[in-house]
Image 1: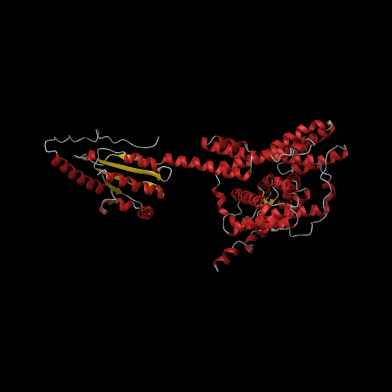
Image 2 (image 1 turned 120 degrees about the horizontal axis):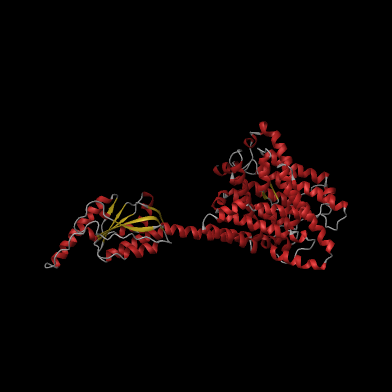
Length: 575
């Protein structure tokens, strides 16, 4: 019963449209606006991935509707994105265009499973420098992928975007100057229009206007530039892709990478959208379910895997979108293009789409954000640059994994540095024999990375009869840390030093009992909740030890009582 209720909570309901009676006009306007903005991007991402412009357009239509209805965000706009293009391009190059539908469906199934398993909140574990480094790396790859089209050359044989761009530039010498200058001029025209349009009016769809002007100019001047080519005049009939064992085995790793990327990008986009709008929080698990279903449906129609798109979601919010109707309308606008405008769209130069993506990639990198990351801490700066470099040089998912690992290393190091053991003065007036009592306070975290140093420092104490270990300030304790305390007690007791423990927190009590800390004490009365009784008990042990020493050495003079000022109470803490 609980499982059914959990699944029901992930499905659409009337509550998704409670604001619709008041917001439908704004949603329709926002949807049309986003559709206009999304058209050139859908075409460009389709071409850049190797799947073709039609595939990008189909993805924006099919995935846009499914994700809007089944997703966990009221204002998320989904479709083909730059990050997905970066991952999908090598897959198509390696396995052919026929693998597109299969990998889309497989990746979608994985994302759906992640939603059903309620893994949506995992994305909150990603450190900010990793996210920003990942974003910068993707932006660089997208820009480099457009270099061949910008110069009218074919992409190089390498699967690495940087190397492929260099190979394409080297091949330019074999073509005529006109074949190079014409696409470069188209890219420059598109870039100028896109940069200038927001300064004229922030709501002008600069990319669409740039595409229209560039297409008209290329057609009127008969420029030698490659065009998109013929597009289907309707949506293709859905088809189930071939998913035999051999296909699944060959595409499993790629599907896993695409699914991970789709989940990360979609949840990040939804989180950003929720933070800049007043439409309420998003449901992370439902968002995964919706995005997974969107990729599956897109694969059936020959489209690409889909993700939430941060830029289009932001346009939706700025344009007044408040409910799912806006994202649905955006998809319907693109559907109208499929049925009514494939002729003009087929004449768009590929160089114009390259220009759109080059400007889009540049806008993905925020100088303000870069300064914030680089100006934060040295560790965060290192994590940022490592993630960005690996993203560009190797693999996106590996970049995230390594970025998280490096961030975890620095976090662990900081945690170790914040941990320590301090030798404290005994509170109150000094009494005879107090110099034979050592009070140690454990601070911060005692875990596997800090345990050995604590063991060495406390076990090295000399010339004392009693050691009091204060644990009330210990915030984090793992099994290794608890075992270290056991080792400390046993090592000191073997040397004849009595160990008293004070202030074990209730949340740590089960662990220290299970590991054997309490059993290692000489007597069960050596466990205290307050420091004063522990000190008095320690003084009684010191007095008995002093009497025993006097009995063994009756002619030896007693040592003078040290004052609080002369007591050596060094603080033992990691620098």
